Length: 128
Image 1 (spheres, rainbow, N blue to C red):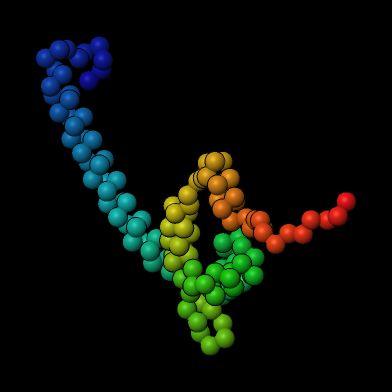
Image 2: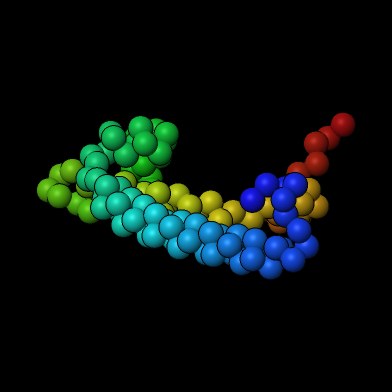
C-alpha cells in the first residue's frame, strides 16, 4: 500500500501489521542478546599471567602486587606465579569503579585537618 492509496479505514490493518513486525523484531533481538551473553561468558574466561593482567588493566606491576597482597583483586596462586581470569578482572574493575566516593572540598579539608598531627605541648620557646 502506498501512502496515497491508504485510507482512514485501512489504518487498523496497517497498525496491526506494524505491531506484529515489531513483536518479531523484539523476539529476534532477545534471542541475539541471549546468544551474545552465552558466547561472551565462554570467550572471556581466559587465563592470564601477571604481566598480561597488568597490561590488560593498565597498572604497574608494583600496584598489582599491592592489590594481591591486600587481596583486593581476584587471583589464584599457582606455585610461585599468579593466575588471573579476564572475565573476573572485568567484573572486579566494574565493581571497584562503582564504589568510588566523591568528596566535596569541605570533606577533603576536614579529613586533612583530622589526619594532620599538631603538636601543641612540649615546645620550648627560643630566647630572643
